[in-house]
Image 1 (cartoon, one colour):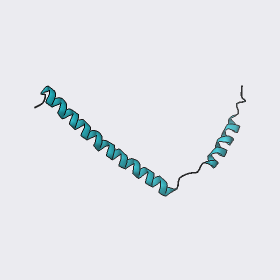
Image 2 (cartoon, helix red, strand yellow):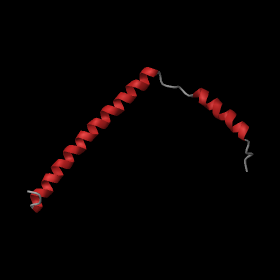
Image 3 (tube, helix red, strand yellow):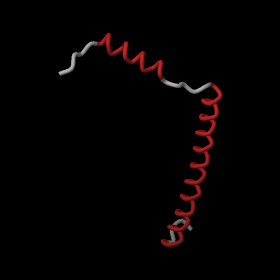
Length: 65
């Protein structure tokens, strides 16, 4: 079994963290904005799908109208 040493683990984690290419502030801002835009688009899409399905069910079963 491998030797378990917390100090060595922390040292290796820090070494790996230095190798990471971190995004710039601008890249982070653009990515965040794109996430919000996609959430809004998906919300509108599912709202429309829900309304169409609801109308279809009401029409088929004669409910609510």
